Structure formats: C-alpha cells, structure tokens
Amino acid sequence: MKKILFPVMASLLLLACNNQLTKKTTSRMSYKKADWIHNTDVYEVNLRQYTQEGTFNAFAKELPRLKEMGVSTLWFMPITPISKKEMKGSMGSYYACSDYTAINPEFGTLEDFKTLVKQAHSMGFKVIIDWVANHTGWDHVWTKTHPEYYEIDSVTNDFRRASGMDDIIELNYRNKDLRKAMIDAMKYWVTECDIDGYRCDLAFWVELDFWLEARTELEKTKTLFWLAENDAIDNPHYYQAFDACYTWTWMHKTEDFYKKDHDLKVLENLLYQYNSAGGDQAIKLWFTTNHDENTWNGTEYEKYGDAAKALAVFSFTWDGIPLIYSGQELPNHKRLKFFDKDVIEWNGKYELQGFYHTLLNLHKNNPALRAGDAAVTTYMLHTNADRKVLAYLRKNGDHEVLVLLNMSNEPVHCTVNDEYLTGKFKNVFNQTNEDLTAKKTFDMQPWEYLVYEK
Image (cartoon, rainbow, N blue to C red; front, side, top):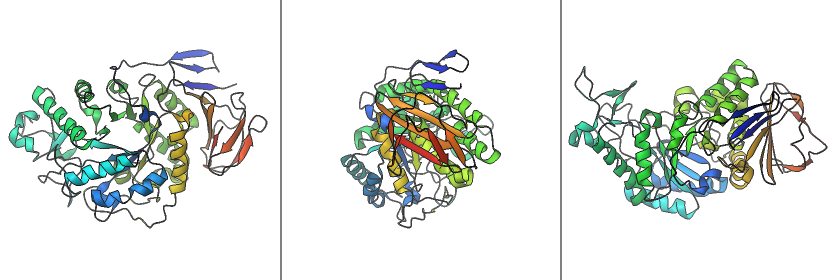
C-alpha cells in the first residue's frame, strides 16, 4: 500500500518502504512571525494596468469588491518613481527605481498612498510593497550623490548593467554605507506609511547577510511580513531572513506536466523537495501566474489550459499561501504589456469571483490550511488512480480539508483507499454533504477538482 505522510513537523514518513527521511532544517534568526501570515493570501496589484487612471485613488474604489471576495493581503508592485534614462517602452519598468523614498507621480502622491493604506487597514487588509534592492535605474538619485554605492564595469568604467536588463544597474553591497541607506529607505515606508511588509524582488541576487541585517533593524519598528522572490528549493537558506519564498520550479514543472504529459510522480517528487526545504516554519507561496509570467510567458490559460483552475485550487489548499494576480477573478486571458499602458479588460462580470471567494475564505478560516504550522499535517492519500489523481488530506486537530485533483484529460472513477479519511464532509463549492467513512468513491471529469471540509 502506498501512503505518503507530509508532516509540517520535523519528519517525512514514506510508509511504502518504511524509510524515515528527516526534514532538512535551516537555521534561522529568532525573528517574531506575525500570526496573520499563516492564514493569509496575497493579491498582487498591478496599479498601472488595474484602472484607466492607474492611480491609488482609482484603485481604492476596488477595495470593497476585493474585501467581499475575501482578499487578505494586498501586494503593490513598486510604487517608487521610474528612471528616465535608458527607459523601456513609453512608461518604463516599475523595477527601474529613481528614488527609494518617493512616489511615482503616475500613481498619485504620498498622501494618496497613505490614505489608501489607512483605508485598507480600516477594512482589515494588510499592505505590502515591492522592494527592489538589487539594482536601480540609471538616473537614480544615488548615481549623483553616492556613485560609490554602485558596481563599476571594468570595461566601460561606467555603472554595471544588470544581467540581461539594459535599463538597470547593480548596487554594491560590500559598501556598508549603501546597506545603511537601503535599510533607512525601507524603514521610511514602515514609519511613514505603516505598511505591513515587503515582497523583495530577486531577493536571492542580494547577499543573505544584508537581508538578515535589514530584518533585524526593521523588527525594531514593527513585525513585518517578509516575502522573497526566491525559489524555496533552490535557495532554502534564505528562509533565515524570510517568512515565505516562491515556488518557481513548481510553476514551471506543472506547465511541463500539462503540455508534455509527464507522469504525476514528477510532481509528487517535487512536493517532497518543497516539503523538505527551509525547516518547520518555512512557508511557500504558490501561484499559477504573476506579473512576470503573464507578460513574458503567457497567461495561465496559455500555460495550463483546462488545468488552470485545478492548479489554482492546489495553490489554496496545499501547505503554504496562495497568490492571486490582478485580473485572475475576471478571468484575464490577456498578456499585459510591461512598459506601456495596457489596462485589464474588466467587463463587470468577475466570473471567477465566486470561485476565489470560496477558496480565499476556506484558506483564511480553516485551521487545517494554516501554513508553516507544526500543528498541521498533510497526508497524501492512496487511490486506485494514482497516475491521474492527486489526493491529499490536511488535518489540524478536528479540522480537516480533503482535496482531489484529476490531473488528467480523462474521466476518472476514483476510490480512496485510506483509513485517514473518515467522517462527514461538505463540498465547499456546492455545499453537498458526504459521509466519507462509508463512501470513498468519486466520479471526476477531466481536470476536475473536489474540495471537502470536515
């Protein structure tokens, strides 16, 4: 009998061969973690493309809808001004900063942003902002006031361009004064605007000891949420400084799985790796799209087709926290331009708002879906269709969530053969009740998803 136990605690048990694999642990500083992180979600706001105006004030009108949908944390792509020198397209890249302590006038004013944060907080949202610490644009104020903060290209004797990106230049983290200035700039947004955390762009391109230094200093102001754009299994040591890391490898492998018909074992083995990465409290961020993927590699429907919703369900129900990108609730079938105005084609229907409402509220309210919590255990369930169905049960005390994903383009008559699954459950999408002590069979259509709450 095959049964895999994915504990969030210190060990991983593969009963099929009676081998006990010890979870790799990564030492981390004794930073306090805000409790709200364990059940949060992240909604990425592409402010430029969200409304025709592309401003803080225009976006504020969307807050009631997002609150009703169940969103907890708003992540704003960089709000700092964009460099003009070497600017790409007609508007430039969010990620080519010209001043770390100023507002992009495209979006409004500092007071507009403060007002937006206050309004969001009053409605129960948390607010995090994108922080681009690795590089700046060519005409950042520091290029004039502190050129020593930058790496120099020995060939051109000019600032060093970032790898593969002509509109940005590299900072020199061997310079202690740069480190202090960067930390002071990060602290500014916490003390001035009361933000709740940072999504750190290309975090693994910046030395880990800087992030440890930055977090140690910023912890003196507020307990923040630290999210790293860094794949959890590629650089698990970054969990020493960060609460959560990306799952880029999973995102790419699931696309390969859908397009190339890989064995489901490939994905299960990858989940083993993620389970082992970073230690007991390491949180993974799961997603099917974001600003980079949508623009450069295609929409979630280009990548995953009919599997897109099943993979979204996975993102909300596996151990970790889910990401929603602007427009996924539409749903958005459009690649958004990166350097030019290209507004999301809202039509007022929000066809997937109910879908995400169900998942957001389940993830937020059910203790069995808490991320990085030693009280939660995830069981991979044995079925008669292991080559096609990903089935798992998450438990925290008396709270349980059952998930079945048909990861194939064929109908499946699935039987769960596992003593872990007992009791009465409710289908979260259609509210029907099932006694799964006796009945453990499920007829599933291609790429269908089933989610039950005990």
